[in-house]
Amino acid sequence: MAIDFAYFADLKRNGSPSQKQEIGEVCIANISPLERRKRLRFAAQQFLITLVILAVMVALHFDPLWRLFLQFLFSASTVSYFQARDKT
Image (tube, rainbow, N blue to C red; front, side, top):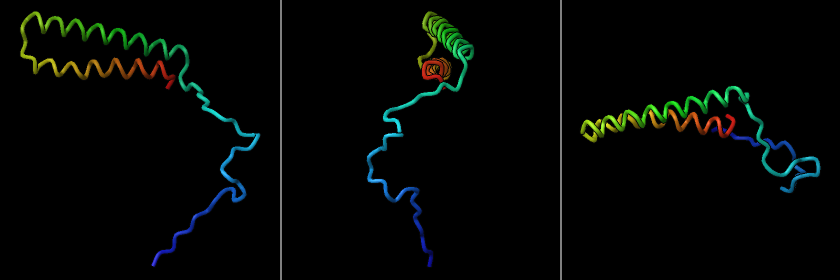
């Protein structure tokens, strides 16, 4: 038979924040401004390259299923963009 114990850090706390604690969110960037610019530049370049490939595929009447592979390229650009925007 296993016995589980729960340990609490502060038993006197009633759920309301104390005056010393901040209320709200604090976001500390973990990438430098240079790295954010690199990620934004990569996102823009990747997006443009993907659009050019899509235009070529449409112009040459490729099977629409082949266009699904462009999802990976589009997702790479969007992930880089949101990482730079959210500073992560």
